[in-house]
Length: 135
Ligand code: HEM
Image (cartoon, rainbow, N blue to C red; front, side):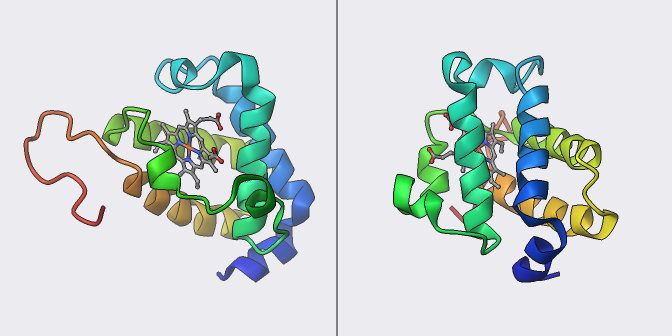
């Protein structure tokens, strides 16, 4: 499903709802909770909301406020391996269900989120092998 179609189906209201549900789950999560800025959760929520709006062709606010996303570089301060990747994707899946995003959109976005989350990995977690050959 392409981005335009996703945005047509859920609108800015759907994007806001799923991001809000995600950030409702983050603080109490044993893996992700400690990584996020406790004193700026609203700011973090807004950054992800605007990024998704930009990514789905909704508007350009993210670029105006933050410039080029440079997501991999911006995630370097955080230690991200398979464990963190999988938890992020799992929490976002729960968030999309809670936000009542349609099943076909959930499927498409889930694949997108996994791909991006996998690209964020910067920790090999002891395997000693090339953990992110595309980086
Ligand atoms: C792989 C697991 C991930 C972890 C552990 C993680 C963690 C974080 C943390 C701790 C922040 C800082 C919060 C803030 O102050 O904004 C952040 C920022 C952000 N993350 Fe992630 N993230 C992950 C995956 C993703 C994915 C899959 C996406 C997008 C699909 C994403 C999009 C963003 C965006 C847009 C920001 C704000 C960047 C900016 O500063 O403008 N993250 N992430």
